[in-house]
Length: 424
Ligand SMILES: Cc1cc2nc3c(=O)[nH]c(=O)nc-3n(C[C@H](O)[C@H](O)[C@H](O)COP(=O)(O)OP(=O)(O)OC[C@H]3O[C@@H](n4cnc5c(N)ncnc54)[C@H](O)[C@@H]3O)c2cc1C
View 1: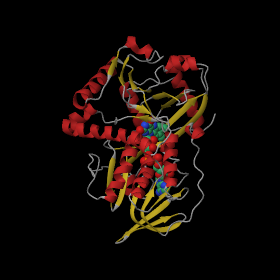
View 2: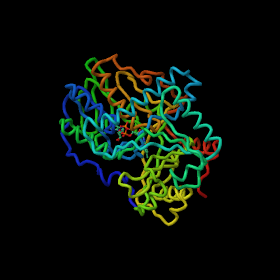
View 3: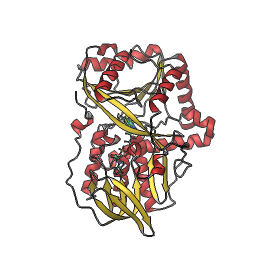
View 4: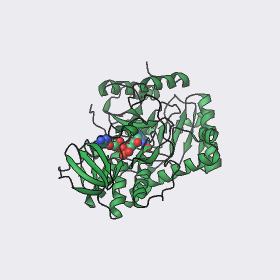
């Protein structure tokens, strides 16, 4: 079993020679995932000079590790937003989620990225009658306010969509997409390199000092000057800006790939090649690999473990969903970090002159693609960005410094509250 992401088979981490640091750039970008690279592209296309730094290999954060589900959903449901903030705010929020979804499609088209982007729909599954009623209500509300299409799938219709005895019904969202996240990121790297944008892997930005002319950027390979700084560090946000670290809750997310499966078995289990999620807070996410060779499963988010133990536990869970996989092994098992916020909403803003876009709450493919563009726009045309997520109060809780020790307990609490069953 391999412990690197399955995605790295087709999109290995790019080998980039160590380049000398520039003395000065218009914008220093910390983080080389979707957010950082898209911001870099848009800034350079507008004539600004940029340097991108990453403490690890380029794209070694969540952008090359995720499940590749491209949606327009937050953990904060549309129905809950209507109740807490009113219909106008909920509509504006979810309209912007659609813009974020579109940002992925636009980026793929604009940079001609071959990354298995396909719109085959998502199936949201219910394990209990209560969940089924909840998701029907949620998607009906979205249809009425936003026109988002959906189709209700009663229990009798499930076998034509999924070969699992686990669920009582579901809702199909026909216009959502999937992608090969590694190839999407690799396409961005290619576009960045074609424009001569310097990428600095294994270069941690360790301190930022602000003065009247901009920033002194200290890295573990030397210093430079920058007019502006962007933090695009999401789940990997460290102590560089403690203010930001105190507002983010990093989550470990776990994913595995089965060994290659017979085509007939995949066609029986996931006949329509959609993306599949259940309706728990501690969500299970299932899909085919883009080449149709195997099944990929994401679950047990927020749990602490090692990759080998987790591979076994994830496979046991997957067998509960698909008993037909009883003799199947794991080919890859890996982990990555995403970030939640205390209000369950993504945030875009500027603190002490430093621009940030973080807290994607598991919607980082669309939100990173969208916010990367908005970050560049904020620098190019200050005051022009219109976003429901921009410059909103960004709360933390007293004494919280960014240590996420409570996450496993919180996820257990949700499992108990919602009755999520786990493999024995
Ligand atoms: C297993 C998993 C499954 C997921 N599934 C999905 C999904 O299906 N759909 C979806 O929409 N989202 C999903 N997500 C979330 C999504 O992948 C992320 O939200 C998104 O990739 C964040 O992109 P980013 O560019 O903001 O940050 P990242 O890609 O995480 O990059 C941040 C980078 O910042 C660097 N960094 C941090 N501090 C410093 C520093 N001081 N100096 C230099 N570099 C620094 C890190 O090394 C890291 O490479 C998933 C995440 C995981 C882990």
